[in-house]
Structures are given as C-alpha cells and as structure tokens.
Length: 199
Image (tube, rainbow, N blue to C red; front, side, top):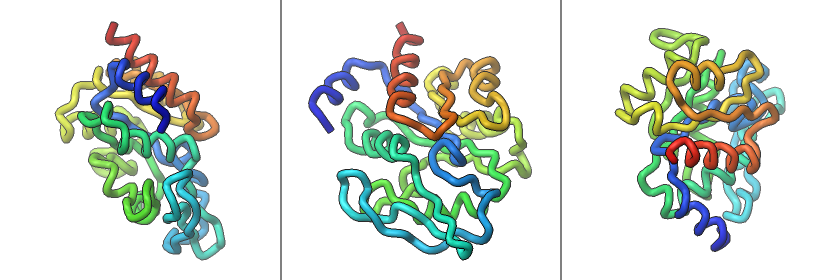
C-alpha cells in the first residue's frame, strides 16, 4: 500500500463496521445462479499478495470470484493500521445461504486467510429472523456487534431493490451502491461520505 493512501486513511474518520452485501457486490456470480455446490478451490494471484484461493468452482464449471475492488478493500482493512478498531460484516439476502457460507470458508483475502476468518459478523439468508428486507440483517448485526448504526458503512449492488436507500433512511447508515460489483472508486466514495457525515 502506498504512503499516500496510508496518510489519507489516517486523516479520515473511519467507520467501526464495514458491511458488505455478497452476491454481485463482493463476488460474482450470485448464489442462485450456480448449478451445483461451490466446493472446488481455484488458485491464482491475490492481487499483489501472492498465490491463494481466488475462486470456488461448482460441478457445472461456474466459478465464484471476488471483485478486484472488493479484494483490495479487504486487504487494505487487514493491513492498514488506521483500520485497527474496525470490523467487517456480511448482510446478504442470499437465496442459497449454504453456498454463501461455502464461499466464505474457501475464498481467501491473503494466502491462508479466508473470508470466514475476516468477517466477524454474518447476517446471511432470508429465513428465521432474516427476510428479504435488509433491516432484519442490520438489526442482527447491530445486536451482535453492539456498534451504532451511525458508525457503519454499507455496500450493496441494489439490483433487486434500493437496499442502500432503505437502510440509510431507516438507520442512518452511510451506504454506496455497487451496481457492477465493488470498485475502488465506490470504496473511496463511501469512506469520504462517512468522514463528511462526522464533520
């Protein structure tokens, strides 16, 4: 990571909880599109961090992979000291949560470090206390993390409804839409919006 990025992060007021939608925001394709269980690890380069598990293949040959911007954001949070007090969470209304958890268990951020190890809190699926309304996911994350809503940022592709607008309206969470998967510019936008909300 460049010195310029580190300096800029140190000057920003960062959120205590970063919440990612999974399908079409953190990774692609969506779980309901898979024709079979994602179980076969696929090795490759984790940006500049070396070789690790960059994909999970299912029986049909489809491979789930992180968007480069999402991987870069996660790597930053794990390496930049400015993020030492922040935690990572998932808020997904996945139609096949079993597949989501399989991907979390296999996909890596750094060689040997899986998404499951990185995401401290999970609200995945739409059964039980969870529904297609992501307010249920945020209530769960808030209760488990004890982190106030105004200390969170949220990323969501919003392809099936304006989840970002909905969560911002009801809870005051700073959110950014990621219609083509999380990009570096959307990551920067969210962090700047959060910082400005605290001024």
